[in-house]
Image (cartoon, rainbow, N blue to C red):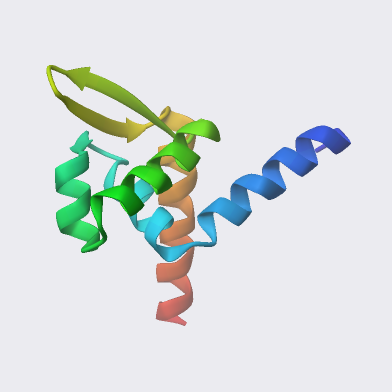
Length: 99
């Protein structure tokens, strides 16, 4: 597979973002269903400002997409590519555990 240098740099930045356990947990939680910011705060036990910061970074990398409903904002994995890639990586980790 051929990848251009600028794409390689962008991909490297995405992996750096996912190197943070809190951001990775947020993204995994948004894989299958939308989560409100409040739901994510409860799940991560992080402050709302920290969760908002992580969501802003994930949104900037096109890993999550927001949907506003009144005063609440809900987040979901940006598209099927993100969800499928994460699922494959989770499956990979589980396979390693079974060896």
